[in-house]
Amino acid sequence: MATKQQHRNMADSAAKHETDELYQKAKRAKSDNENGGGAVRKEIECENILSEFKTTKVLSDSAREKNIFIHGKLADQDAVIILEKTPIREDTLAELFTGSTLKLEMKNDIYSTYRLQAPPQLNEIKTTVVCPATEKHIKKYQRQESFLVEETGADYQSITLPYIQKQSFSVQWVYNILEKKAEADRIVFEDPDPTVGFLLLPDFKWDQKQVDDLYLIAITLQRGIRSLRDLTQEHLPLLQNIFQKGKEAILQRYQLPASKLRVYLHYQPSYYHFHVHFTKLGYEAPGCGVERAHLLADVIQNLQADPEYYKTRTLYFPLRVDDGLLSKYKEAERL
Image 1 (cartoon, rainbow, N blue to C red):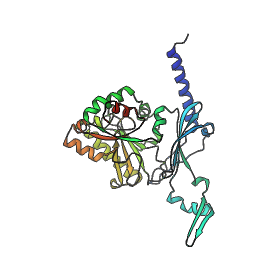
Image 2: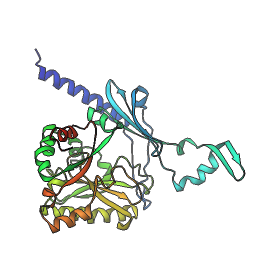
Image 3: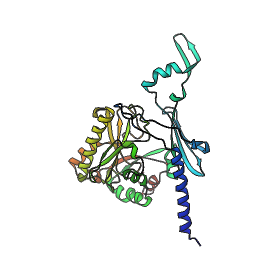
């Protein structure tokens, strides 16, 4: 007779098999176009796995950012679907103007408003599928009230760190990237040094079709650095290497100079394996506000001035109302 653990292992294996099948259905063939801008990819059509998606509820939406986050079921598993309207690209304007149809809505003197129906190839919706989605994923995308937390060095040791350790947040998907078991074709730059090396690849929020919303992530090969709080002077060579080589790789690949880049890290991070964000200056990427983003240049200078700066410094960060860490701060009467 099978044990409970064997039943759980069989269920986990079946869930993984279903997820792998979904991934293989949705995977797109991609290749870089040697046009100096790098980022243009060839794509092939795939089976529409979303035809099986059953909507449970809309988690959040934004008219300004033109996106919507939806929770539902896909192959009997919880899933989150993210739909985002893609930006209008300058190189498609001629086709957009000549190939679209217009319907007049209003005309008044020199002003007129139309409803434009673009050709299908210029009317794409970027779609991200998270499946199977955990409760943490669902909460992440749900519209919620936020609170600003004040965390001292002592608070980190007594509240934040024990919470992180107890939760055991999985970063296996990060290790899959580092070991090139997944997303190897998306790597823009690689430094293989085990101590200061990193992989640079596009964030999923960027469709790579224009540089106006450029968004790349540098993921360190070195494991064990959870966040800003773990950084000391010994990590300066790693940080300086990411800062310098990341900017050089982006200049070579996308022709964007360092003066056009915002290079920063989050605290709290969305996952606890050290990584750095590279975005185009002027693009208001999620999480780039002062309450969460820390410029890498400032981090380097702070550690040069004080090797233990982030061990003792009071840091501020936002937490949403149903975040378990926020509950811990409330229980400790720190909020």
